[in-house]
Length: 472
Ligand SMILES: [Zn+2]
Ligand SMILES: [Zn+2]
Image 1 (cartoon, protein in one colour):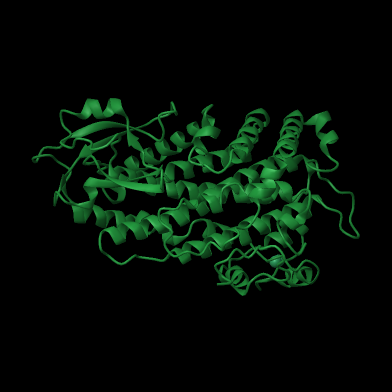
Image 2: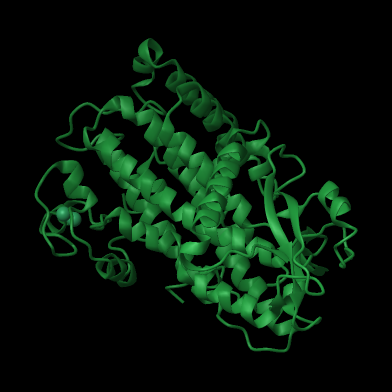
């Protein structure tokens, strides 16, 4: 029970669970831990390292970590086994007899879109295929939507098109071309004027994430800070990952003379194409997360106040990303169970796994980065501390007024948001009254437990660190 409930319950004091510490132990790589890196002291091979053990006597919440530990938590195997190259190859092998129709190769130009409200489209050259069995899973896809009862699911027909890229050197140039196209697609989405509204469009509980994202996006444009732009792109990638890329109406009409499948709903997609695109996108996302972590490491090392705004803004976007990952993990587990139950098969995994993962996301990447951020910039007064720097709730805003107008605008807008939405932000940080542990809550919409929570906690932690650690 203890493991499933969120460990940040009010009133909880003292050290973190054994499990969180064990996880920090699990990932061992050479190089300094983040804490030693920032303090510019020599680290050792032990996890936790000797320095962190010492620091822990004063700051018991601190875990000895490296960004590599976070990548593992944010990209859990549970949700991406089907993105492995061999898995997709097997999926094709099991379901497709050939990339032809009646023995004739039928290439086509497909235009895909993540939302009608985005002008950016993804255009790919694909091929029609013939399936081994008409009843094959490859001919359908599950469509999730929020209906009157919560999450609803419908089975829609999928078009028999996909990418026919040969293995090995023969397909190398096609693969890099595909990767480049998908990268460009994701970068363009983050620049769309409707980005903030669209990325938060599924959220029913609160408008706070939309408002935060809108403010940060403005800052990203004005400041030109690459770390913020990258964070926005990664969040956009996650948005693309969590929904179907649909074939545009125009593209459906253009393919009508070849496509033997008629849509049985408002939309049409290709199950194979989605999987092939997301396999590449997942890989790009992991690479981008590692790049952004490297960037944080470089920017924060000097403890330079010029880096406060870009790092703060980028992490605020990552808070929204972590909330989205949590929602996706829980929804994925529940929907996976529901699909198996409807097919009369036992579920592949339990919701409990997703809940444990989400607890780890909050305890490790979220809390540990936030605590380091506050330490680096001295957000709050500590006993022997030098001058504090807290533009959001204390001193520092005047510094921006002189030489960083973009940062000044960012902080002023967020101060305004906090003033207007204080009670809502505070409400978003609260733990549920009833523990969120139900084994199969379908069709409940579980976003309730995650949206706005980490971003609100991070913002309010500038007022009081107990928003992150109850014992602080
Ligand atoms: Zn260390
Ligand atoms: Zn350490």
